[in-house]
Image (cartoon, rainbow, N blue to C red):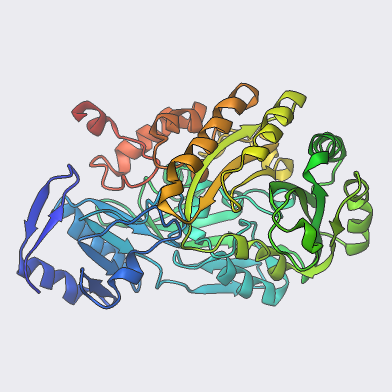
Length: 479
């Protein structure tokens, strides 16, 4: 292997000689890729097609020992580092230009102990991988709504989805993590071992190290849940949202109902004349007894005069994958997000006013329905502080052609600004694009200073900076 010029932490260049590269390679069970290798382009490609970066070197890790070797190599050479789990992050933090990409995607093992209701998950597993193994025993951990998402990034940012209101955030179900820190040590983080690191991992993103294994507690769910879509004409949107808001005031924690506003895709249960028309969709899931679910969803399903109601019993794994066809990799994506403690009439008016200006057929606005068990945890119990949020709005601009970049990004930013007066002022780090470095402190609120202190303790070099970055004191002084 010839010597290479690689990008440093300071975004300069350094030459790594052939002997050092060979020494790295012989330590690994996994593979080392560089531009021109057959698997290089596949390894650097991620979910958001707006991100087109070319790492100088990619280490595809087969286990924790490979991760340790890669971290030591990066630190010793002061290389810019990106860490890939599922490659789904909107900001593209999984990949860097010219530096070292540590690729965890080959590490996909999921092991379940149904007797203790525990799962041990490697960081390259997707949500679909986790669901497949846990649902074999009618068990589940709360995750997200797109099954191609990686478990690692979702967990480290917080993680919420269809069963969060009943069982909490993904991080609320994390019992333990094995972490490779910037000094190349493998640490166990839990409530009793390195508890400061464990606290920071639960919501602090990838700032503190590379998790090589997660241990989750599981809950009895499925194999079927009552779930599905109720589709309304967008002309009724304001009234539907007001009734939706009222219906959720007394909703049990087993019930979650998200809102999606967009142009209707050609779904088989929608009349053809509605394809491409603006609609409002209530997407609901009840994770308890099916008959109780029929009662709990009745008020939501009685709202207005829907075009279609396809709520019924569905396999939990199938419902977890229901939105995958609308979120496939390869499109250009840009997100802007707000947390809301309530959906005021003014907020509803502002949001619905943005739909007639949709810049493309794949652009959408959704409101995640949270609260419940997630809201019963105090804001400082984990690094994730947004426990008072009842809704999370994501303005999802999605398109195919680069010529549409400006129109789609401007639309998302415009709605974000218009909705700001009615929002909580906090943000979910997993929904923040790469141009929101100024929101990191607000995202962590009262937990920000403690996170900086822990960052300084475990990563004073700021080796792990391809994220919504918490800059340690040393890096701040040098800036």
